[in-house]
Length: 98
Image (cartoon, rainbow, N blue to C red; front, side):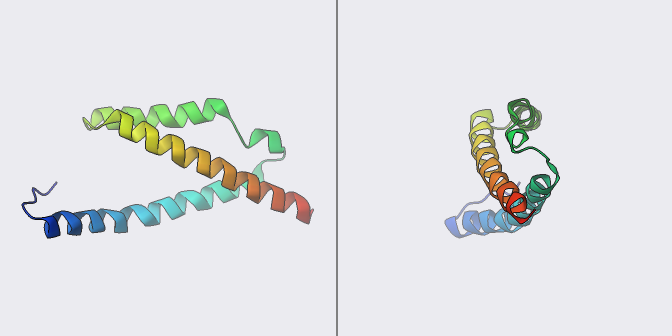
C-alpha cells in the first residue's frame, strides 16, 4: 500500500483500486446469473447457510489482513442481499421462458 501525502494521490489510488474491483464485481454477478439458470427451485435462491458461509470467509480474509471486519461484513451482507435479489430476477425470467 502506498503512503499518500496529498488528496490527488489518495484519489488516484482509490481510482486504481476501483478499476480492479469493478471487473471482479461484474464477474461475480455473472456467476450469480448462472446460479439463477441452474437452480431448479426458486426456494433455493436464498440459502441462509450459504450467506453465513460467504460472510465468514470474507471475515476470515479480513482478519488475516488485519482489516476492519465490521466494514467487510457490512459490505458483504449488502452485496449478498443485492445478489440474491438479482438472482431471483434471473430465476423468474428463466421460469417465464419455460
